[in-house]
Length: 313
Image (cartoon, rainbow, N blue to C red; front, side):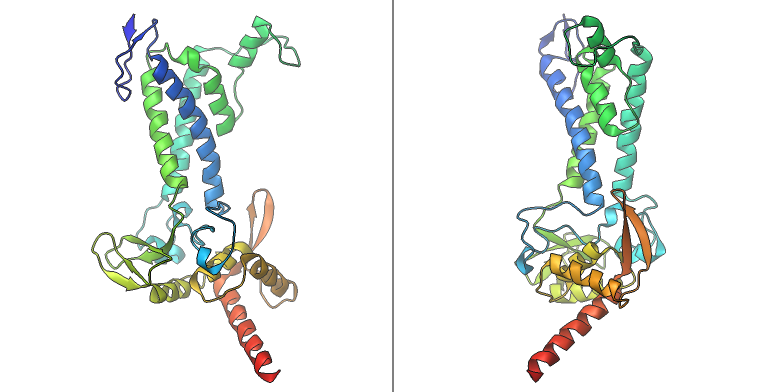
């Protein structure tokens, strides 16, 4: 018998000739599945489709049930975005770096398995069966070029992996990826991004306080002032209708729902009141991009018109 060499486990349990003990093998299986799942969540966070808590789009829920209107973790350094990322910020945003690290790590380990475990070709039953030959063909079938398929390929062979000398290294790297992905996709829902402190540290405010304190230098800022600052600095930012609604709900006194504001933005576009600045592709669909300042101006004019109508009625 050999002893489990996985240092992070530190279980010291004997194994039946494998490199990983039973506990480490189960941990590896869970890590593979979690990396695949959290990588999918990473895409949802980037496109700002992640929702936390309840789905109510009320004023008190901003920052809780809705994603951050501007998530700079997925925007590489660019001059027009430096108001959020800081002048001279990283060339590669942390979200994009994590995506690359996940991709390169999973691809590298799949290639290791593909080199040591040749693909078996031959006739295969069209439906699940108990044939040993079909089982081998399915287990060793090479994956397609997606994280989900490659993680499934690793998972199908995790019992074979437990006996390899490099299995502890694979487990270490996957556990590291899992922790980093969890930190990226599980941003605390009770906070909203309040910009950078004068010392350069990102600040996040809570809904139950009228000020925000920097965690580094302990400087305190008024929340209302921070909202006005962020809205002014983001006026040239190109956003979708949903992103614009999220930003205006979080940074202005607009009390309507996100759904109604998105619908109003699209009506302004159809009536040629709101120019389309660009078009992007999200989840396989073309989405119009608008200048946030243009949307804000139309919202102000709409509120002023409503006020005049009420006074004249």
